[in-house]
Length: 81
Image (cartoon, rainbow, N blue to C red; front, side, top):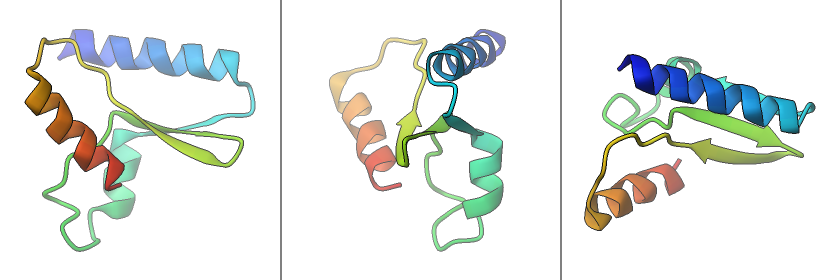
């Protein structure tokens, strides 16, 4: 868990350094804002959401090897965001 938090933090700092005007929304904020929507509590939340030039990009940090099917399932849920 700690390695994942560190990796997400490193990525956040890197993205914000490379894109000074970008905004980072953490998983906790996404959950707080959207958990009250239908199906919001059961959904998969990305590790973060980056807003760059008005575009929203879901960020998922994976530190463990996953099968293609599982990665596809995760990505499909993120696209549905």
